Image (cartoon, rainbow over all chains, first blue to last red; front, side, top):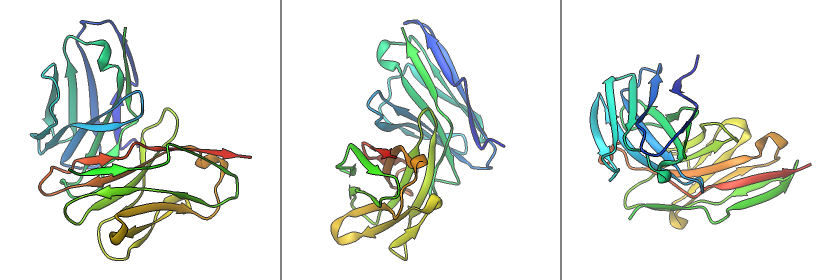
Length: 112
Length: 115
């Protein structure tokens, strides 16, 4: 069973489009995250949700809007996509905020 | 500011040789430290973690790491590298209770293994 799953794995889209990435975890965790990995493989947190409540928003443009319908899901919607949004986006989850995070396989977003 | 530095961007070792990947951190309080591995096209897999206690921690796949507070280091080691260990390795530090579990990552070290 996949612990943290993201869909889609690959996403190619044109500038200006709106797209969503879905994330689900079956670990029973109550904290979920979105991380962005750039072309140099640098990883940086974007958002953190605990019990569906936003607790970290790391100065991400408001074109990015996370939504957590329940503790097991954290989706990422991106409006008006730009070339600079091309990256790999990782979803992760943890038990509360005080344990290690488990990562999904990543979604490679390419904006053309 | 909190930060993690992995001084080596790329390391090449021969199969069967020992490995040490360096990690230095800057953190105001007792850090929670992690090593993750990323194989090509894959997500991040946790190798090991340090929260407290014994400063030498054992992880999966035969890896270990030693926390040295005086040197602000958390180096990853493996006595004998296998070809399947070729991957990108990330060191990370976390602030939990007051930072929402945010992981701060180093730049990563790419490991190549020669046959």
